[in-house]
Image (tube, rainbow, N blue to C red; front, side, top):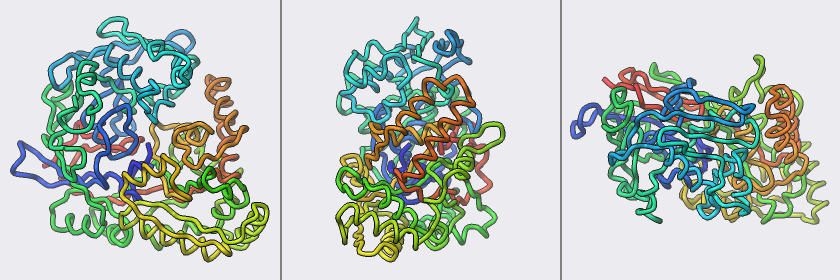
Length: 539
């Protein structure tokens, strides 16, 4: 999930300001209440068009799909039990439990059929539609060659859902926690029309909470316990209040004044927090990186130029001086701890084969830069670095501006700091030279990151393109899909190629600095960098 979504790749969001759960007891709310800090506003509550971590968290709070994460454990949610898998791993049959929408309507298999078809329908313009690739006919539907009604998902009856795949997908069940796979009530969506997901009035919940007091641009909102939720007996916190906070000093002040129970910090405040007894360092499966716009600036089509930019950045110094937390210098775009096999970590294994282009080497960077400029016929390029308007994003941009201009002769970098929604829109529309982006894992597999940088992926904002890379990603999804060892090796080759070419410039893997009072218990943090408030309590 994109932290540009604030996701803020994410996730976390140090640069964009990711989600942090924070809170205090509110006498004005029924029962137990938590107020959490968030890095920015909700962009949409439409499961089909959501792309950011802030909105994603709100959707996870208020909706259920077939599965739900509780920490590292993946449990059936609307699915009553584990599916029956047949046809060599290509057919999944799910039995659904007795669940209801917040308006009293039953959640049926047809709600999943409608939601999935709506997401892959090209006119919906879902940036997550690509996740359905591998579901029968999804690729042809997204390409406009077949109707959405041909998607391999069928309501056998009201409580039985059958999914047919083109080929086995080893990580299929883990993908189903993504909001893109959530059910949607057709009658409600059709009645709301273009307003669906834009305000509290045009939202229907089937999860633990209902979103209240949200007008689409609210800096504050609340989620109240959904009494119709199938698992309502295990929802112990009655109200989740949210407040947008972009400045880490403000977050620290609120925590110290006991107005927050959990605070997420960066910079100097993160450094101070490490000595606090309430400190928690959450290693996240999210990576921040620079995207270089090859379509707008042909200079970035030159591999030496991209490599020079990467090698001109001292990631460890940046983390120490700017982030001042426990974040990890990225050796590649796939985070550590996300994907393992036989005790081996994917990211670390890939780094052993190729990491020279992410090693700080100003002399080599200058050499590659000079050669690259000569090959492109440029001498003194002027480039703009786009980022969010949060305190930490501004400080990060200033650091990158300084180090790039210092180590790359003739380069002039200007900074554009804009609100999250503006940056996101400009990134999507290619209105940038360089942009600080981030991604948070949608499911615990390297493909969640590597798929982003294929030629036609909607999140490949820099438009880097490599035919060999595309072929390797396709091979991992088809020929090697049912062979774990072959698939692992193919994905390693793809990661090594992406790193060598610097299709994107990895910066760091986030470790979230959190202060959390001991009065909150049972709050689980998931592999998708989201919180699960089911079973959580606050004294």
